[in-house]
Length: 146
Image 1 (cartoon, rainbow, N blue to C red):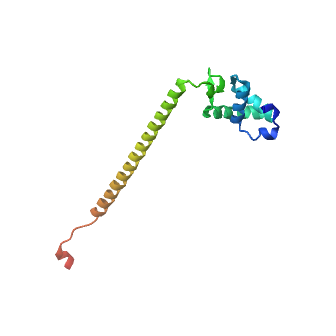
Image 2: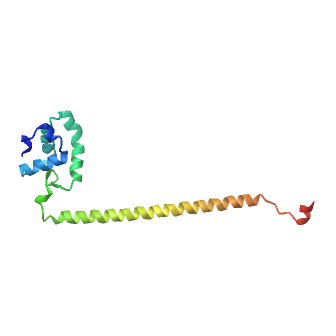
Image 3: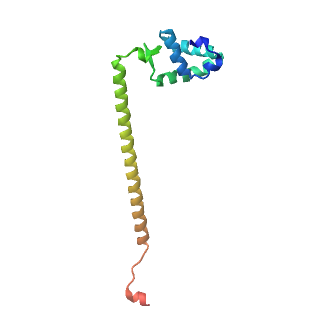
C-alpha cells in the first residue's frame, strides 16, 4: 500500500527514517533532504514552523542511518541500490579501526591517569610522614628517666 493511501494515524506509527525509506522505495529516485522532509511533513500535516525547526535533526538522523546513502553530497538514495559500493566498505573498515584506536587510546590514557593519581597519593603520604617526623625530637634514656 502506498504511503498516500494510508491515513494519518497509520503514518504516525512510522519514524521519519522509516517514512524516508518508504518514500525513496516508492519514488525510485534520489531526493534532497528538503524534498523528502517536505513530503514527510505534508503527509503528517506538520506546520512550516515544525519543518524549519526539525530539518537539521532530520538530516542528522539520515546520516546515522545506514539504510541511506548521500549521493553527490546533496541527494539521498537507498544504500541497497549500491550493492558493489567498495567506498562504503572501506569507510566502514576505517571507521571501525578509528573507533578501536580511539578506544585503546582512551583506555591507555585512563590507566596512565590512574597510575599518576596513585603515585601522587603515595608521594603525598610520604611527605606527610616526613613532616610529622621532623617535629619529633630524640631524647636519651637519661632524659627519659628524669
